[in-house]
Image (tube, rainbow, N blue to C red; front, side, top):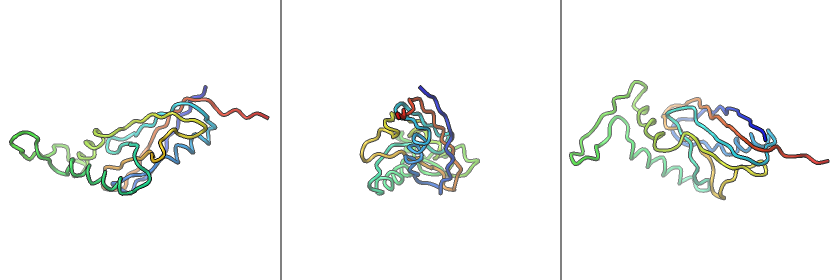
Length: 155
């Protein structure tokens, strides 16, 4: 049984999704890891990780629009009877920062997977995405921790 850790460095193009599935499968293949479990963590509080559809880009488009609708910039409407507008207190890093923190809290910063035959165990239409919640380009780090068996090479 082996334990291997690494960090994947990415640069986002601003708000949106980056499919990181191939990078994780590449890590498993490069390290000759055959079977085991894997944990991935976003090292940030304004981006997140999700598993979602990889066949129709409209899914990601709709997801982005939905997140923006439930977490608006600058302020939000209270769910109380008065429906009062409430401004965010945290705004030092821009109008998109507090909404990014909320979107991260509503999604995931860590995911775990099984892997078999040097590949993640995912459904046919599933991929792993980094969700960038900030408007501007950001450098992002994803930590990977794999525990598993190396593939045996028999001669």
